[in-house]
Length: 102
Image (cartoon, rainbow, N blue to C red; front, side):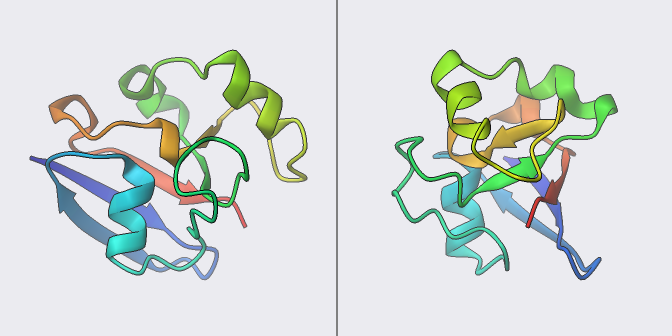
């Protein structure tokens, strides 16, 4: 089980728990504002864009080339950007904080 904290653009902090699937799926299931997942998690829309603070980037690993390519089209993308559909829930993500990038 992993506890994942989302911080919305309104600075609301929401912590949810998950055991499997992607972080995007967990966010959509829990109605986290700003995570839409329009493409269903196939890395083709960037409606699940989050920023991963530096202290948590070891937990998420590096973005794939496909993910990096998709993020190039995002206005708010930076070196901390990830698509939450590409982050699989695991014990490694327990305690992570993600800022929604909308």
